[in-house]
Amino acid sequence: MDSILVRGGGELNGVIPIAGAKNACLTLMPATLLTEEPLTLTNAPRLSDIRTMTQLLQSLGAEVSALQGGKVLAMSSHDIHNHTADYDIVRKMRASILVLGPMLARDGHAVVSLPGGCAIGARPVDLHLKALEAMGADLDLRDGYVHAKAPGGRLKGAVVEFPIVSVGATENALLAATLAKGTTVLKNAAREPEIVDLAQCLRRMGAQIEGEGTSTITIQGVDRLGGGTHPVVTDRIELGTYMLAPAICGGEVECLGGRLDLVGAFAEKLDEAGVSVTETERGLKVARKNGRVKAVNVTTEPFPGFPTDLQAQMMALLCTADGTSVLEEKIFENRFMHAPELIRMGAKVDVHGGHATVTGVEKLRGAPVMATDLRASVSLILAGLAAEGETVVSRVYHLDRGYEHVEDKLGACGAKIERIKG
Ligand code: UD1
Image 1: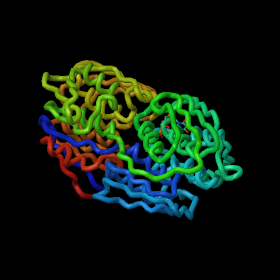
Image 2: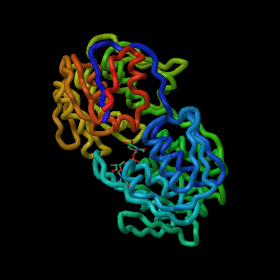
Image 3: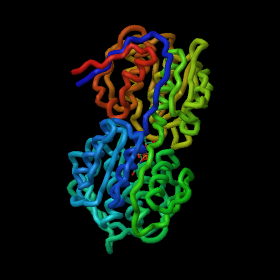
């Protein structure tokens, strides 16, 4: 297993290009199942999660070709001969559940393995299933699989009110509703930029959708969808992660392709902490020039609130802030597993239930640490860049699920970082 070696202490200065969003790409790819015509995604990120979704779609009979080094995904689903998403693939990645809605909408039946447990909490899929049931699906849960059928071969429009905001359940329902008979209204829908991107792509394919980006989305089902070409939206989590690099280490980094509307609540917190964020013609420029950052309190919330996927990285910053910060995690239980690793590096963090109190120290010290999930692993790299001495982050396969070329991107800004093949 590979690990990442970081020698901390230096400022970071330079330019980092931000890739297309992993989470958008993972919901755009299953949209190919809704049409027999080709669907092409440009600006795709080159990540192991995207390769897992590729394998899953191929196992169903879709053709998926990664072109231009993986930046373009050319997909065609004219022959879907298998309607079972197997446990062996689904267990690797929860987003696999997103093939359920489209397969059911297209052919009236699908069998999808239930995703297994996950390091950051229970993460059930009940809301996905309830939405599809409201649209007329008969669901039978047996042997670890959801066996789904649409009576008469077609889902029907429905009013679906989500009890809590769920990105994945909103996506599954939105995908399914495009081909359902009649009108579907999704209430208390997620408003994330990835949902807006999905709706825009589906509209290019001929879907009739209104209200994406608000909490009520209305979909008028159509009889068939066509293909198209769609650019994947910028990855706001990768963007936020690299915005934190100069905030933690000092220096100035311009994130190419960055947009304030993607990271509004997060950029406000950086500003409160004393880090400057400015819009440029090419993206966002982030600089920290005047000593330590100030402590700030952070609560994770659905978009447009502060994203849970930036909580671990923000904690790395606050470990060296002047004062005491409280981080409240409201989306996932058990998402502070980076805290004990940061403590190994000299951080003062006290986790109590859904809160973490972080008392800033002047300097972190390098240490061997272990990545527990995707965002935790990058938070340890950021902390290592700010620490005195060497940090070795092991189990970086988590990192490769969500960050392409992390060593090259940070290395180009002066970071001393290398991958140790293991
Ligand atoms: C997506 C993102 C993930 C991000 C999360 C929250 C992808 C591939 N992943 O995950 O990176 O951290 O949004 O922004 O896009 N819940 C239920 N029942 C369900 C579904 C969800 O109780 O059927 C709960 C979850 O346990 C969680 C909350 O709802 O507490 C929000 O989860 P959700 O928005 O669904 O997250 P994902 O779509 O899995």
